[in-house]
Image 1 (tube, rainbow, N blue to C red):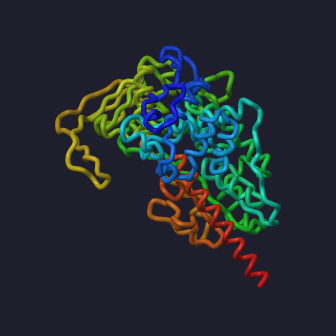
Image 2 (image 1 turned 90 degrees about the vertical axis):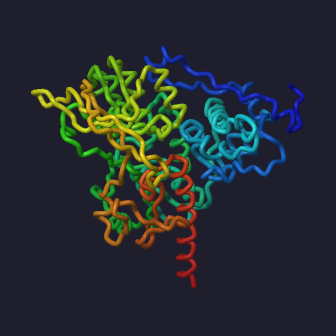
Length: 477
């Protein structure tokens, strides 16, 4: 089909599969599982994109990438041009190509997807970004002349990095304050290396530095400095992008026993502090023979797949709803199952049991059934009376979602939040109740996706730019 040019011919081209490490091999390493397209597969996949359609995929992308434009570049074999087309809209394409849930966004509304598999937009985004990185022909985005204004960005996760890049392009001197010892936020502490390699993150952060962005680590805003301190030090505006990293627990008996982790702590120890390499690394992580992961979102899949690579006898995911209600991406659940993770659906722990040394040794569970739909539209789980049973476990990882750390709220007078501590911000601008303070990402949603946080950061950066321009014009007048 080398001469295919019509849309009719394009629709006959099958979706190009992406090669992966075999399960038996990958469960023994932390190397990336999907291996990426080779040039021939990327070119063929790009030819599946229809010419002349209305491109609803653009509206389906939270950062507004001109998807047909970069895919056309791949079809023309201008792979570097494809990467640069992407980076007009998104400075983190290699990251988004790996962790963005495209099947729920741009690929969901793909025109060709109405009659078959959607175009592999995420796979092509990854290919173009990787091609540029591996070619060594990395282009640093152009920045406007210096405005003389300084902006503080709190947090170096997806929202912070995106906001910083957009503001740097406008000529602002941007400083990112990161609480941990290396930048990246949830990208480095929350997402395993077999999904997102560290060199991919570091490369895209390095581009940001070359744009003039300063990154200060080990700086906990709310402790090291407050928001008011930042203004006192001469910053003209602040963008808060600290995410939602406060773990939820079930508040059931025995939850404070040794051997019970939040997914946040467990993944941070392994992903960021390389506890998997102990004693070569200084941070240990205890992992017993029988691991229980509570929850079935993407974080639960990350925790269970990471546990499997540390070689306990058994890893089991427990979820109170059915397989169909599990919120994780289907591909992540499939990968977990391929790697030996077991699943027990319609099962919920009600009590943890400890040994004489206060380590968890078992948990009491109850079987569940689904009742009427709740406010989210999912059927509410309810316990089945008399169905309690005991499971032997010696490590438990609680992956039940995250809330917002209250540290910034508690140290920033006049900053309005809702009852859950989520910062109240205008969705059209990211503007908060404090003048000059804007927010984006999970800190204003309570938890969403990497790409949605990035989209909100672009909106907030644009609003900050307009705010500072308006202030300048008022002073001039």
